[in-house]
Length: 81
Image (cartoon, rainbow, N blue to C red; front, side):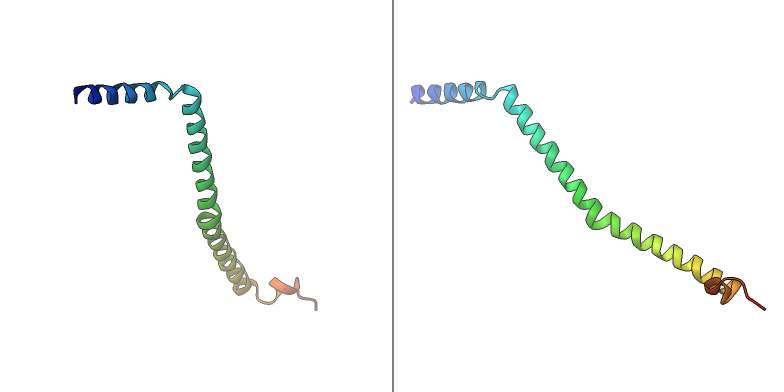
């Protein structure tokens, strides 16, 4: 029984040795690419529509205030007499 426990310890140590820095760099690069993809999706699905909605409302409030201030000349230019 003690021999089997000792052999398990050596197996776990030898498997740790096979994990080298190249593998670690590759895993870090994959994780970085995954994080970038998630940020792109967040931007395109959540932030971009929200900013567009906000800008559209600001422009519409500005356009309506200008229409109220100038009347139909806002759309047609200066009144001709």
